Image (cartoon, rainbow, N blue to C red; front, side):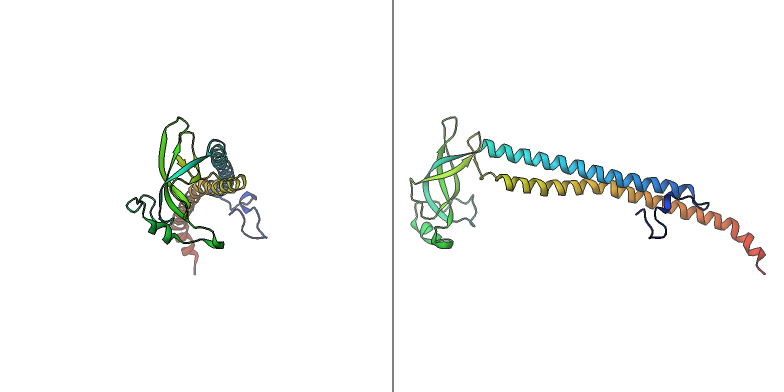
Length: 213
């Protein structure tokens, strides 16, 4: 925004007898806005990405795999609603209809399992299990320190990619704030220049009109 072409680079900072005070103000506004935009975007993006990375690293450290037992045969494929327990009985049609996944391996379906929390209490919940899992079969699930079922934590590379993506989005969103404010301020300066131009034109136009033959 501070350049008007190869012949008038940095025109806002060049000496010019026709340059008005508002032009000088706008020059510093442009410089300040760009510096603030870059600074805010980098700092907020770095802080947001670091916070996400710390949370993901903490999940990877605290969440642990736990052995659970299947208590009910799987009721359907994973595309079914997890909270729908109406069909989660000992009906063999659920497992039979699940079919097999790619490569001839059993597909994943929703099943009810039971595991023991760190405090020694028995917990039950629904998670993805192989379609051929029988009642009483042992499956591996992930739990948090409170014993609740959680998803498998991301790997180091996955955590790095996710933190970079989220940090970049947060940084761009934060950088848009000073950029938009600077745009509004420059529009206000432009309107003020136009108003001053109208006042000056109304003052001198009659004088010039008298000299016209």
